[in-house]
Image (cartoon, rainbow, N blue to C red; front, side, top):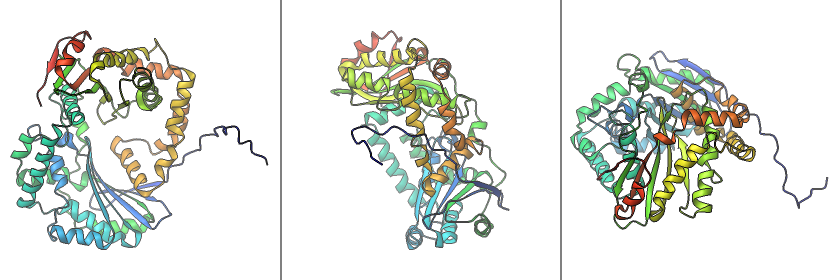
Length: 456
């Protein structure tokens, strides 16, 4: 067969994705269990999913969830920090801890022959942490130092002011790291009390994938977690315990943080949008790809390629259990800040019908979402994180199997309707971190009302 190398090969059909079978059971301790047989490398990945994240912080103690998680690997009731990490090193284990808005995850990767030892160490880290006073003081001071450092980073400042502006008085209205003032007041008792509530194994899900089989692993998990404390009844996700965030337009739609002498402005533009379980979720993914979710998007092409105001911008819907934000992120020339904001708002408005999605844009967006989709399930780590996403949002078991056909079935009218329903330029807030002496006149001419100045 002769191959014509003067022509680029045509795109083939998007491969069908079949997510590995997930077996769901409960241990006698009340811990939910999800196992996935993922043959290949002799590796297993465990992930303990806890439905409490930074939005579970007490209103007067932001940062408590993240501080608690940061102390988990500082030793256990029976091991010092050196002994604990020595035990992890002996089996080649890698421990990971992440605190998100709605959930905390603790993961451990090791060789399959160390399955029981690795699982026991994971359980020890989560259920029997040391919480020593000296460790608390050291970790707390490191986090406070990081907060002070972040004040010099325009992107970090913009992120903080943006969530505070969109979610005033709501559990989503602060970053997971908390505040310097709050951290300075947190005590070991605060951490222990939060841990006893938030780390209840009755509200957790243990997810395991890799070189394992369902029944033997169930027996191993039963042995390991049989004597672990469970601390009361199953705890509901925070999203079931608080009211949805308000979608009202903030009093100030332009918020400025002065950075004298800066040659660029850091921008966050957006509004409270939609939760993950929205029925038009797949249409929103396509919409975002067209508007600002990839390099060839409308906004990146306009602000970078045509106007030369930026190295690049991007947009995203942050899908959470409650409505998360839609936002544009990027930095632009300081002297083009006002024009850039006006362009973003105009593009947000136009995509809902005035300048509807074209067929080439639709094809590019769907291809970007579907053609690499199967690569997201190649490793055991990717699989456990995918299962955690299903658990977190109470999604159907076949959610990943249906992803490609659902995205492929999205037409221009569905994208337009999603934009009309969920994208609101008239409610959008613009947070700007840049040189006030250059920006005040530009921002006042946008016609977005009185500007608010914020000191960080």
